[in-house]
Length: 253
Image 1 (spheres, rainbow, N blue to C red):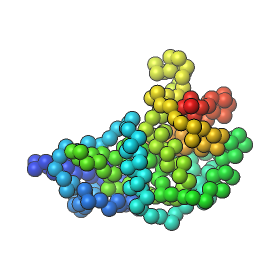
Image 2 (cartoon, helix red, strand yellow):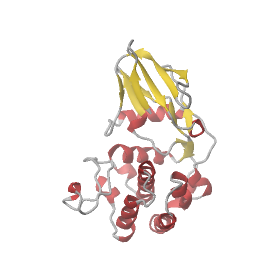
Image 3 (tube, rainbow, N blue to C red):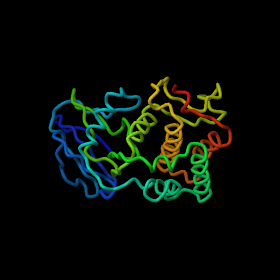
Image 4 (tube, rainbow, N blue to C red):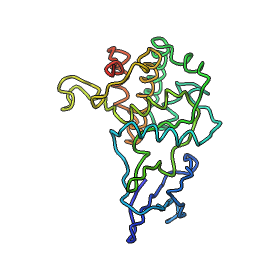
């Protein structure tokens, strides 16, 4: 996605990804301007003012704003992890991932099932809400004082409500894992949460297991963006959690 403004201070957004993977969000703030050039889609703002795409960390009031917008969008599609299994998520999110890492990710899911009863508890949830895999601050912006959700968002699925909040927390606050020789890891702190602390409502074994699964997805999406089929960050993350017993979710309480 790209942004800019015309000589008359009309802001616009340009999208390039395939429409088959996007959802169009109905908004009074944006008007679809067509394909210019072919293969790109342009939306122009209906308001005058400075366009700003938000970056992390963002005040959590915007999380509530985003979730209310998602509640207005309906889907019947169950999230693939709930439908066909958690172990297939690595390949779904990153088609070019090495087969060795696909197997390692599957073993990691087995570990999460054994340690946190991840899949059986998740699949027992009866309340499901609109969700997409990359919920976070980069999907939001403002024109002047008016906040908005960008007019195209990734494909929606139905998932448990806690997935929304935990995915937001990860995308808005989390960074890592940092390797041992990193300047940011001089104190051997492999994970950082930007000094975030949470209340007790997400302090459970169940939510901890969900968090480690969703962090792995966050890292896979980054590896796919970087076109790193070896997935060195994912490999380090799995080793730290599964082999070394690191528990970064507990640092938030």
